Image (cartoon, rainbow, N blue to C red):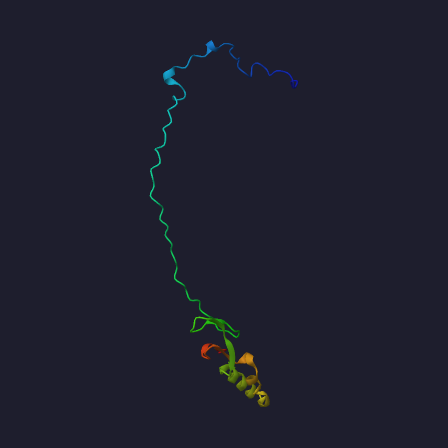
Length: 139
C-alpha cells in the first residue's frame, strides 16, 4: 500500500500537456455556445379598462325549525323573534303505556303515564298571539 502523501502512480493518469498548442483552436463559427442574443423589451403596458366588481348575493334560505321537547326561537307574524312556550298534552304514547300497564295487571297504576310529561306530546305555543307554532309527537 502506498503512503498517504505519496503521488499517485503515473500509469493511472495520462500526462497533462504543458502548453496550449497541444489543443486545436475552436473555430468561431462552430463555437460551443451560440452568441448571446439581445434581450427583447416587453411591450409597454396598455391602458386597461376599469375593473368591474360583481356582487353576487344568495337568497336567504329559511332554516327549518325542529320542534322537540325544548323551547325554540321563532319569528312571529310581526317579524319579532320570540321563544315558544311549551304545553304538554296526552297523545298516543300515553294511552299505549297505560294500556300495557293495565294488561300486565297493574290496573291501579295505569293512570301514572297521564302525569308524566316525558310521555306526552309537546305543543309549541307562540306567546304573542297564542297560536300553535309546532307540535312534537312522541309517536
